[in-house]
Structure formats: structure tokens, C-alpha cells
Length: 179
Image (cartoon, rainbow, N blue to C red; front, side):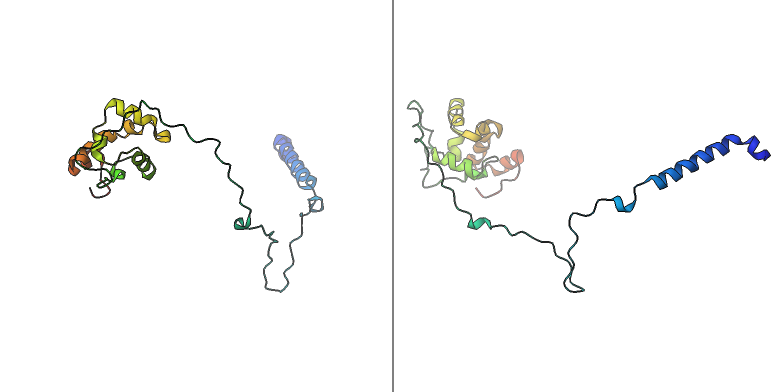
């Protein structure tokens, strides 16, 4: 009894902790009050057959009806008459000896097709562009606007038009094809 009189604070804390522990253990909800599952799991048909979830079959995409595409309202306007033609290379005909413009860093199949549609098929044509030519052609490139200056296409084309593969690769990296 002397221990209890000397250490009554420790005994009081112990009683409070014990009461809180009992309240927590007995005050929790019973297992019966837990929410039942939404759907009971399916019983396997055979003792060793795993239960399979029910799958709703969807219609495959290939059988969906094709929606008609809207027709364009009007043809695009013709280019302005003040546009000057793109300078041609004096030594070779573009149709006979077109260069692979995709060797230029930053020129992919779509941009190469756009340039070919404008009559640009040779490295020498691009190397001869002036600032006015760059501004005029850049306006016609749509999503590729600014690509000529950003990727230094005129400088790259100058190397390739001269056949300077080593100079090109030293400045712009591996060529990625044959000249």
C-alpha cells in the first residue's frame, strides 16, 4: 500500500489507459454491422474450376457503321499572283534528278512532300534561297512555319549541294543516308 501512496500518479495513468483500451476494444462496431458485399461471389460449377467474372460483350469496332465525312464547302483560294517562282537549279532538271530532301535534319516525309509540291526538289534550290524567298515559302508551310530558320535548312542544304558530307556531319551529326 505504500507503493500506491508514493506512486499514485502512475497508478492513475495506468487506470485511464486501461479504461481507454477497453472502451476502444468494446466500442468498435461488431462484425455484423459491416456492409455486406454488393454481389456474392459466384460459386464454381466444378470443385476445381475457378470462378469467372461475368463479361459483357461489346460490339467490335469493325462492325460499327461508317459515318459520312463532311464535304468541303469551297475549294481553297488560288495562291496570290504576286508570288515569284522558287529559284531553280540551273544544272539539273528537278524531275529527273530530285534530291532526297529528308536527309536534311528537320525535314520529314510531310515537309518533303510540301516542298516538292512547291517545286523544291534539289538541295541547291534551298541553298540559293534569299531572306525574301524564306519568308515567302515559310508562309506557305502551315504547321511547319518557322522550320526553315529553326533547323538552318539553307545552311544544311549548302553542305549537301556541295557534296560536303564530312562538313555536314561535323556540324549537324550523322547524315542518315547516302547523297
